[in-house]
Length: 367
Image (cartoon, rainbow, N blue to C red; front, side):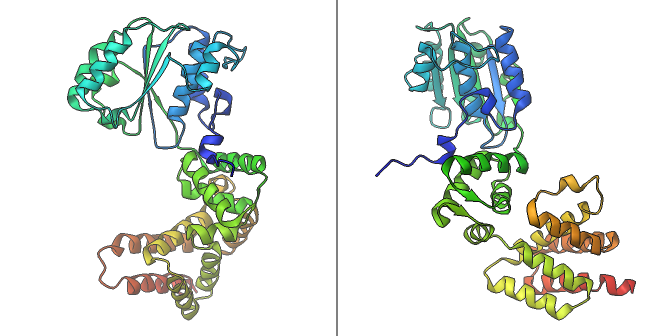
């Protein structure tokens, strides 16, 4: 049986050009290499799964490449690149601060830093999850970080920048990585699907991207999960079934009944949602998002804020045309109020039903 490699590892970027949605950071790093303006310490911070460690590895590989291309990318042919690609480089050292967070670990690192590289100009030390270092370890690391040997470069990566002491921050060039937007995640998932011979509906990939919450690694993990569930054909129905996501259709039907003041139909749809195993809080948050999406569809300037595509986007535009802005703003106010009261409510079902009845009567008052 052939060994399976998860997509997050198989399609991990190996050059600056393949890093998704971090153009400003990759451009700055490339210019630093091109102009020989390398700092002795860098701090990469941002949410999980956005490419911090990946960029650190690419940067480290490119710094020591002996035959850098015209667009400042590693050649992947020289001895330094080959040793890095086969995980046998003695110039690039990775340390996980989550499990090596004591003073002794940092002391052994500072002893190692003194040894010059055997091949190439620099020894690069990538310290992941650096916020996990103890206070004493941070203090032991300070002097080395401020005045390392000329051949040493430190790249620190963290998801929690606020936990790092100011004296460390002041010694680093700080790069803040962005959350990856839904459009970029969908584009990369389409590329992965095509490479794997998987046909995928864009609406389904859109749901995966929303569920990933800005993290490409999470999106690729969910993609693998859906492929295991549905095989080589990913449909919107398969995605919402596997991820336990409420179908957009529930919300479209609800709004149609709201506009006609049909309270019994609204309550029956909510009953169906509960019977399908969905939580009332999850439902009311989804309804709030639906009203928000309808509201942004009302104006051609804000329609770009709608994070869905394909046929569903057409449905949103059509339903938004049938709704007045006053109704949508009023409905958003009611759903937001329900969301805030949900945790403290003794009768949660009644709270949501009352909110739905109030929304269904918004247009009735106007009539």
